[in-house]
Image (cartoon, rainbow, N blue to C red):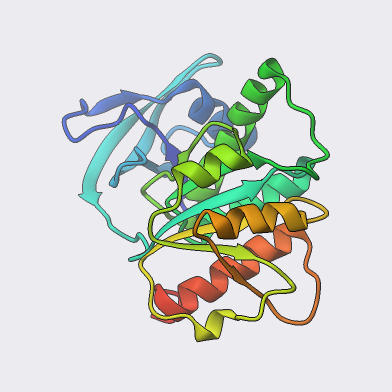
Length: 244
């Protein structure tokens, strides 16, 4: 059985030998995975630091581990990728965020567009942000990433375009004349993906006016979550570390 990894943001290089797991890590380790005293695990703080650890004491409310060897790991992509992800419903959004983390994005901004089918009040937006953060943490735990990507607050498309027009800015457009293979090597990338139903013609025009380059992605129409995964995989293969 693979050694399980847990996100512990309070962890640092000077943490004491006996470390109490955060509540979320405790619940996952004890109530979901049923780890026992003596079980091996790994802890990471989302900033590059990772520890080997052993479950030492378990109660219903909390658990402690004995910290062992520590190390700093850099398995991040050489690319700096910001994903502007149109908000879609439920599992589709979760899937897009999960795979974006696995594929090495640095920052994710959920965006509200014309065809978003999700209505977010302030309270609901806050709840979704907590949920999406959990999805991203789980993806880091599973994929071996030691750096937790930044999750920014939900933005309207216009605001996101104005704040993220530095570097190579790309928007997927099935009617574009240019494909990914014609683009030159890039390192700082902003990728705009629409929600279910895609971006409207007006929104694509708004993006290109803001400095984004429209690129096509083959002859078929992809679901929003498929487009996110496929585009990031192509970018990492062409310019990043998927081919290493």
